[in-house]
Length: 209
Image (cartoon, rainbow, N blue to C red; front, side, top):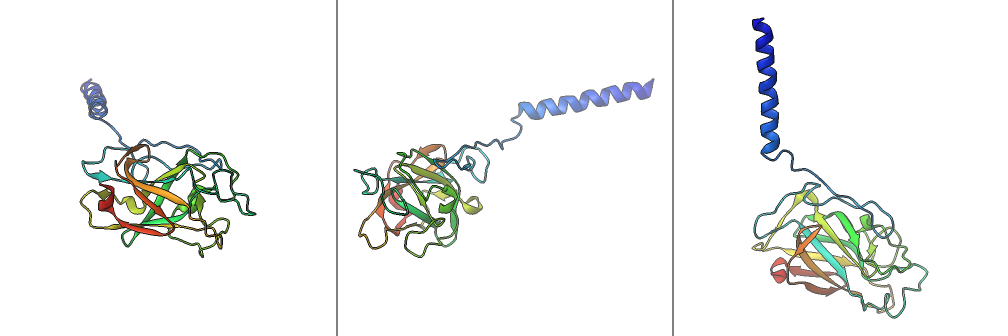
């Protein structure tokens, strides 16, 4: 009888402990997924797939947005044999190490594109400077928001630069413009100021604040 009472008490104790943990907040690792304009599965929200609230002055994500007046979007979509509408993002690098990761694409104007895989903007640059399939992501009038590899977080006090590798339309003299901001997450809440760039561009983080 004593053993039975002891077992019941221990069971209730374990249940109370689980309830207390859940009330205290439980897990903070939910995530969101979606698809880009080419039907590709996109990354998750937050840093390295986790959600949470960054501290004041911390920005885990970056946004690169197309200029809708780019010549391969307006007045007509890109008509080349390789269709790369809008700015073509090969990569972006923070300082000497971190690259784009877990990118999400949105806002496409719907031009036909042979560079519609958002994962081609992730990782280190691999373009030879000309147009080629599988080397970059064409913004197509929209934008991408990405985290940084390794879960790197930008702070508004950082003395570091961002380099964006945008591929020009080979031999055409066409310059494709884009803007860059930093964000609290891939869901938004981005910095007020943006850096306006074309081609390969390097600028200090401080330009965004």
